[in-house]
Image (cartoon, rainbow, N blue to C red; front, side, top):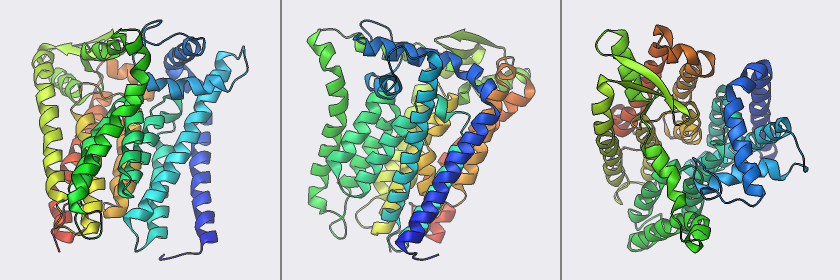
Length: 434
């Protein structure tokens, strides 16, 4: 496929979206009874937050909340459209449908962004990226409709698209709104700032203007969170910091890379381990947990620094526009994976975060990435919702599946950063100057 007529393109894109919607409906309907039980606790929390907020209560002050302030957008919208006196089941249905809507918008945004990445063959790139996105949403249909993580994913993809179309303020605002709702889109802000700062004089923006655009991204990225914090500044309270303190006190969440290593060591008789429930999740304690909690921030910081250095090198002004575009997409994905892999928490819904970038990376030459992430999603589902209590009991099968999933995530991170084979083939971000 090279170029197709606009009518054919719209027809094919519609078919992809229908596949995505149909697969989500089929998977969730087939397992609905089990899924409602698995996600009931989270839904009740979301509904309680939404009800309190819409009644005029202020998060962190009137009620405790473990999420950033703009999380109230995807949590409260499903309740806002319902009539007064709606039941919990109606809220859950509305929440589900909003997440499906966000997922469709993500796929459309990814398709639109792919056209920017491949101006030589925009139709094929857009349809390929949309198909990859639809496949991964179908694979994660047991996860994403039941958590609000697809909303910050949409904010991230809108921010990345604005960056690639050279709109620094809009990019910063979208990413900032993502940060204010889920924190993790913040990893893209330094990548976008490097993208603009290292812009070359020919083809993209003038290099002399790069630092100004990078500054615009940084300033705009702080505005959504600053707006959310205005009520707390007026009340002269720092209660909004409570959710950060809450997460800082958490241990090694059971699905994290660190916890997986401890549980594997326990199964092999190398160390002791115990699973405890606190801070609304299962965490792993043991002899290794203490030193892992100390080295975790160091390892995480070094991994992120490594990606940033590779990005600074890969987006050098001397490289071609295509190389810089590919580098930006691939290393933005690597940055997200570094944040996920070495965090002390790697909850099930985290596998939703990279869906858009995995689909985009597939059109830069990494064609197997969607299939690899598909496998990662399936291994994640083995731990939750299918055999979560087996994982809590540290049974062999779920422990092996968890460590295999985590190993694949780390492997993908290394491939994206090193990319030596791809560099020789001139396919992905870390290509040599022409």
